[in-house]
Length: 221
Image 1 (tube, rainbow, N blue to C red):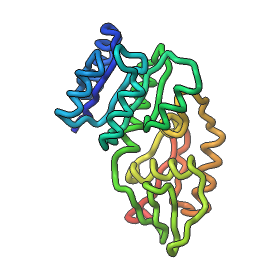
Image 2 (spheres, helix red, strand yellow; image 1 turned 180 degrees about the vertical axis):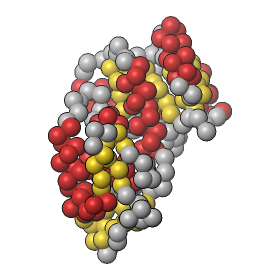
Image 3 (cartoon, rainbow, N blue to C red; image 1 turned 30 degrees about the vertical axis):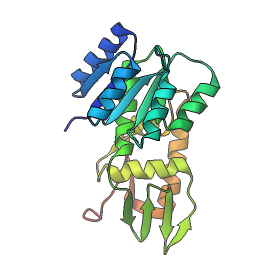
Image 4 (cartoon, rainbow, N blue to C red; image 1 turned 120 degrees about the horizontal axis):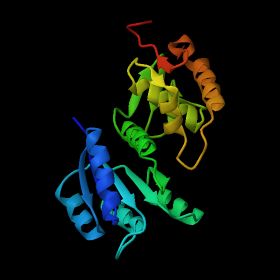
């Protein structure tokens, strides 16, 4: 089943470009130009992701998302912005944004970030593996009910591998998930995170040379 995306962008041409691009990639898209109609659409139907411009007529995208979060709507949201100020970025994440991209937007990067955001929002909240309990909701790993120290990015990498269900996760996918658009990904850091996960899960973490990494499941071990 394809994901359903709401696009709130007041530039009509750019809105249409986004709609056409995402529909070509198999998404169901609702493109709207103003916050009032977008808010009504959110109340009428369920979306899997919101793609929001910050600079909008009558009400900015930050206030729009704030209204949704205050109503209990936890749908993943990605901001598109031409703003350069750090305060808007911090405010957006504080409200509950999941990611953001600066304009002009690279459409292929946008697609990768949408995939990563949807991937994080889906799947079970807890996993059990080799005596460890992996709790996505708390960003914690437990063993015998005691928390096991782990940093955020290695934890997010572990979740990616678990959600892939034994399939290889490409290094590029890992990079786009672990680092927001404004930051440069570190492939050296990815190797460090893999090493840390191997200290917990040993040879279950497999390096697929030149491609990425995978988690070997029980039926394969």
